[in-house]
Image (cartoon, rainbow, N blue to C red; front, side):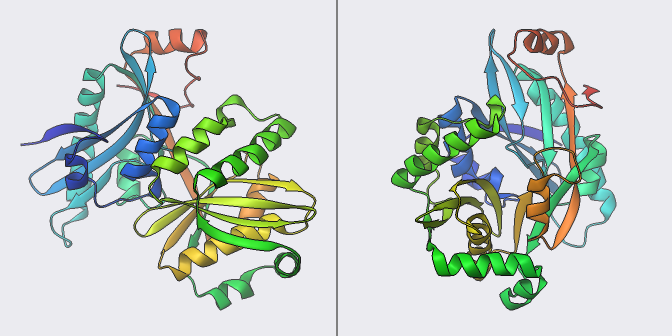
Length: 337
């Protein structure tokens, strides 16, 4: 018999269910930090069948009248674990379909009006889940694998290696936990960069947001900073058990190669610490020539398509929320649950 359980981040059962993470964005500490910083509510929907278990972390954003918008924490999705390693693919497909039905009923019962999801590149049974979740393909996501560093260095194009080598000579380098003082410094540079780029509101965070994230992430956030007389850059990395993600980054001034050195340092340190994969993400737009995507591609070992989609539980309520600016329009292909 299938049963679904909703677990909050302050519920001790989270550790019982959530010890196996498919993505660093799905860790309890990170979700608790984001909840505290943004005013959202983090939940773990656990669905259990006779020979499988699925865990699906979501962030619920509050709306008036006890309604919610459900979103995966950047990359996520339901992690399905089979009781037997040799279980047939048919069991994974069955589990995904049953899980989807259970999640539908659970979210509707929680007052959720819509769900938007980005499936993690590291998600177990990713294509099976994509079919059950009616996910479509989007822009490319860049990945790094746990490759030997000399081999990785040889793969970089010559210009990128020259940038990093020069930056090493000219800049001071620091790698460590993203703590409260680091959060204030990062927030200062990040906010000025967002102003200069004219970034959308959803990419803007104040000092308190970064401070809360640093204080509650419990060492899950690490920072690589390359800094010198003429400027610098900081890259933040979110860590999980075996995976990590290039979280946020900013640069200031005119120090050549600072951003390249910060990213290279973070990847190198994580791989040396035993991380088997790092999600770099995609571009700032859907343009294949997007400069952010080009930068990440120069460090990546692989590209996979973003798998994304949406589900609508209350179309009228969601349209009303969009009309008053409380929600964004859903991506194409949204499915009515």
